[in-house]
Amino acid sequence: MERKEFLKKTFALCGLSLLPAAVMESCSTASNSGPTNVNFTLDLTTSANATLNTTGNSLATNGVLVICLSASNYVAYAYACTHQGCQVSYSKAYGKILCPCHGGSFSASTGAVLGGPPQTALTKYTVTKNGNILTIKS
Ligand code: FES
Image 1 (cartoon, protein in one colour):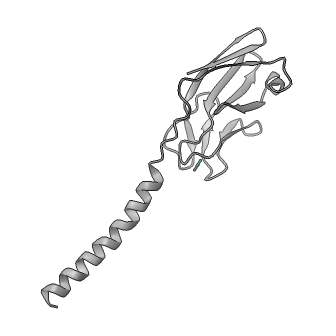
Image 2 (tube, protein in one colour):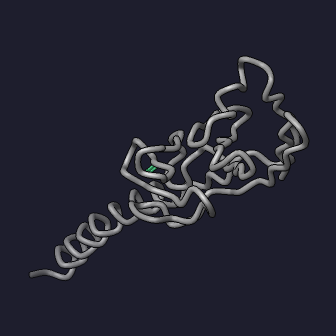
Image 3 (cartoon, rainbow, N blue to C red):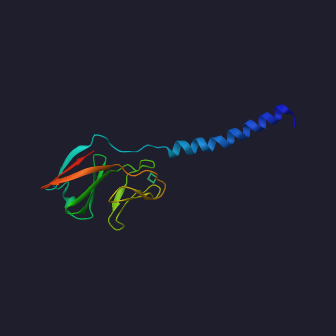
């Protein structure tokens, strides 16, 4: 094999082997940490928010998934999956937060990754309840 032909084949192989890595890298580095400077309230007496009066129900609003784990325990997370940004939802049946796109699952009590391709926990927000008003903050 001549030197020129050797170099041509070597560069062709390197190019082919680097391409999938570049594609994989661009797919796996999505940053979906959710909204920042979150600060809003939900009035549980309004029909739009009434679902949160029932344990196991959830509501997606303002980029945030609010879950009623019990009458005195509410949690809130960014609803964009940390893998590639699909909208997650709470599964009462499984007691987990699930992503419909690639099977990611997260803890409902901490937002930690439980399974699937996500590598990062969901961003958690603080929830305080004062009477019938929930306040969700970063
Ligand atoms: S976008 Fe959620 S698991 Fe891929």
